[in-house]
Amino acid sequence: MKGIVTIAGAGPGELEHLTIGALRAIHAADVILYDALIGDSIIAEFPRNAKAIYVGKRCGNHAYTQTMIIAAMIEHAMAGQKVLRLKGGDPAVFAHLSAEIEALRHLGIETRILPGVTAMLAAAADLGSPLTTRGISRHIWITDGHSDDLKKHAASMAAFPGTLVFYMGAGRTCEIAQLLLSHGIDASKPCVLVENAGSARRTVSRGSVADAAAGAITRCTHGPGILLFGEALSEKTAAKEAEYAAALQL
Image (cartoon, rainbow, N blue to C red; front, side, top):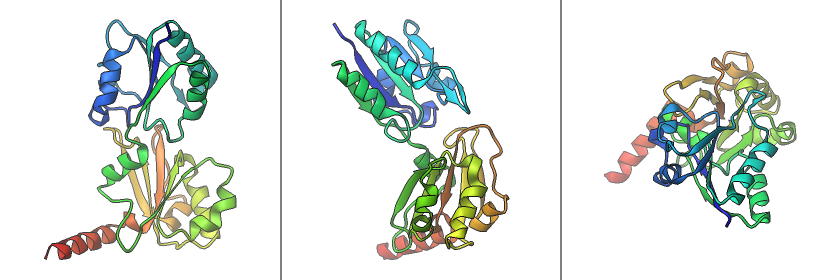
């Protein structure tokens, strides 16, 4: 009899961001395949009788390839076990979800997906800042800082009336900012780099697009980083939003 595979997001990797559903899945699992971002506070919740398999991938150093991860999920599910694939962030955001569910469903393995707190939301919480504001920034553009399409869409991103979010953009802050500047983005637009968002190891580097283009905003840790541009990130914009909200209550 086939087992079931649960693919769950662990958010930034600390217990305080874990959903109740993900915690229940941990406690019920026979096998847990977990990522590099999963912290000790979550690992401490792993059942003693569960088989924990580290499948982390960081900076080119891969404990398991994606093919190996999928093969392990299938192997244990076909053996009738309850398998938990525990990912940092949210499974649906830059996390190979499509390849995993396609392989599992092709073999008739029951699969369920549990969302997690994605890095963009953890970064916003760390900053104490909204990503959207009424009348100023109503949109969010999410992309991959390593995408080959950045040059193709640079002009549209530079003119975008909202918040630009670059996952995995920590190592290319200068390059991305220079690209946007070359296509006309306002040089004074706020720029923020958040590393290790949502964890006790978080770092925040603030400035403008011009600062980032000049190399003044660069990564200072080896952890994951998320790069953001937009007026919603400005402290002045946050103050205007608060004034607007107060006015509505009058």
